[in-house]
Length: 266
Image 1 (cartoon, rainbow, N blue to C red):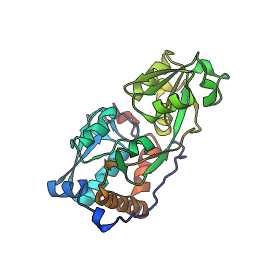
Image 2: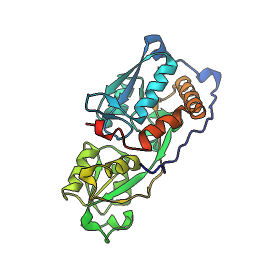
Image 3: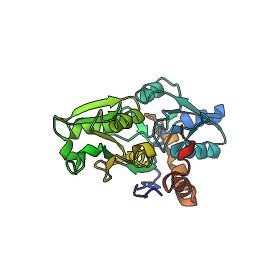
Image 4: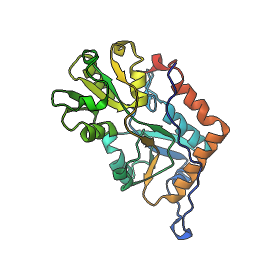
């Protein structure tokens, strides 16, 4: 059973905007079209990932399915590289981003974000040879350490910010980063706490060590084009509703309280 230590941030606060600023947006377009198109990169366990049948599943995917059900539309997941999510949204390839995206000040200059649906933080996985040598993230800030992260993620940004002296090794997917750690090609891997927690539960990774206390504060949210206040209003109401009616807790327990689903993941 996975320890549930992630904090949930669902404010339930609906933001009202001046009448002149309220306009139809992505949600209304999805309703008219009958399809909600969501940009996603299915490489973030347990939020979005591919199972052995080739289906994209996960906690955030289930939230999106509930959202589509509430809108009475079909959900269409559009797979893109994580670093292409914002450019592809701005190029109108899909309606919104639903891919484990952390709200940052830099991203908020380009996007509007919904209320957060969960709070995570970066944690550290260590190669067993570092046992007794590293007890905090600060201990890794030395030129001799090779620290892996995933391209374009806040884990990569955290290494750059907190571990400027260490050697950063970036990989396209977190699975590659963990694999490099297992074979000893890097000394540490930094990624979001939920992913690292579940990675540690896999048999091939059980020799790894972990610094389980997150050292950053990262709210995850849905991203939309700037100025789409009507869609933000609807999504925030939706998040508040599922927090109140038990849907959120049911889905959270499904993906975070145990690992029964792990054997089905590719």
